[in-house]
Length: 200
Image 1 (cartoon, rainbow, N blue to C red):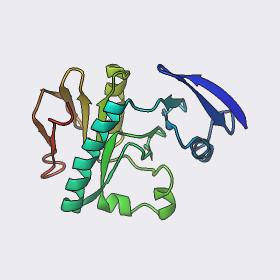
Image 2 (image 1 turned 45 degrees about the horizontal axis):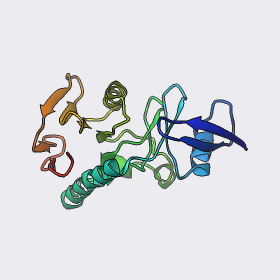
Image 3 (image 1 turned 180 degrees about the vertical axis):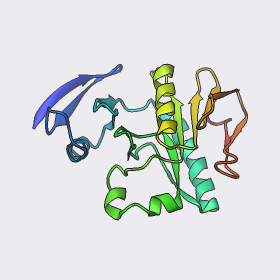
Image 4 (image 1 turned 60 degrees about the vertical axis):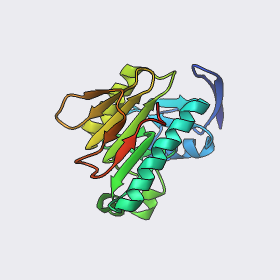
């Protein structure tokens, strides 16, 4: 076991690495298991990204987003919702953890229990990323495009700093909403409306 000190923008984090060489999916899972308190992603090129804990206000907004999505998903019954702690292995090999996401039931149920218990090999149908104070907008925009390129039908990038919501759909340029009171998921998520007053 090797210990590596990784400096983030806010504070250094000590990460226990089972291996230094390029990690397989199984080794990456083991790495994440050894560092359960960290939020970890991996790019399609195998670069491991350690993200610091969210600031308190960002965590508060994240839970309000997940709460609204989960409430709708429970009433709708056509899919499963996930919070920011869920990681997914995209078709391009990247492992990502959107701030909130939703997967159609037939796609989720097609996975084995073993796949569901790991970083499920699936791209969510719908993803939300909430920009925090330390997030680069261009980095998040690239991540949103990655979701779309890997099968997401709809993605929302919420930029609290500028009070904008960037809407992503396949084969379309992103649409930007300026300070909306609410954002509708129609037609991809019929009936889902994210109320923004508690998010801003």
